[in-house]
Amino acid sequence: MGLSALSADGVDPVLRALAEPRRRAILRLVSEHERSAGEIAAEFDITRPAISQHLTVLKDAALVTERRDGTRRLYLARREGLRALRTLLDELWSAGLARAASLAEAEDAPKEKP
Amino acid sequence: MGLSALSADGVDPVLRALAEPRRRAILRLVSEHERSAGEIAAEFDITRPAISQHLTVLKDAALVTERRDGTRRLYLARREGLRALRTLLDELWSAGLARAASLAEAEDAPKEKP
DNA sequence: AGCATGCGTAAGTGGTTACTAACGTTAGTG
DNA sequence: CACTAACGTTAGTAACCACTTACGCATGCT
Image (tube, rainbow over all chains, first blue to last red; front, side):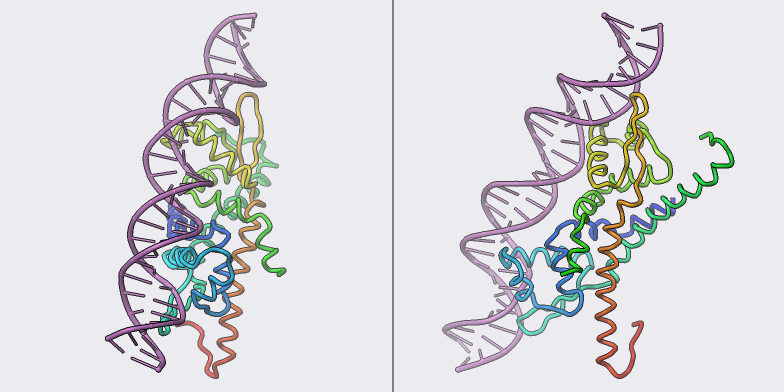
């Protein structure tokens, strides 16, 4: 049950945050250099408060960092926040590989009894 | 533009499917060997129709395959379905690396691990 | 045929989410 | 101080999601 502990890390808020096209677009916008909330909002056709709420979700999921500069707030993607998701992905991927391996192993030995 | 095309391929249903703890648990249940819908439902404290709906979501996201065996339906995780998510993850990860690289370039002294 | 098993589907419901509009707050400027 | 700029926050709403109950549809057995 160590495996489930690995994936139960903090992957839930990350997946919930990424399960929204606009939030992924925002994340890409701030993935290389930081941008202000206004600059981000200018890229979309929804209102600025909506963008602010999306930024809050991303921040709570630890996917972006917030830095204050005067009246502005600058956001930047936080690569470390993706780590839990990468762990989950690797876990599912390797589980599939384990199945493929046992299938290859079963070619010699006919059957397995649970 | 090419980058956004990469991540826009089919990652949305995948992320939506994974953004649910029970669906991730189901995916892990069928990640190594196939199980029937009833066997899966027996592992949870929600009703069978609810599990069936979750399985439909997973199937629509191409994360599981469905095979009929008599009156039963056997499900198995489909590793290939995770590929779009892996692509998105790599894209975001490498974007962060690109930023770190340009930062290191801008500074004279290299700064690697805080 | 008749009946049971195993599952999906339809309809309806409470809770959540993404949005808009209006208001509040903080930092800078004259 | 007053005033503006740049945001976040609150309140309210329409759409969505996960769930349950009831029903339908195959397949297998006698």
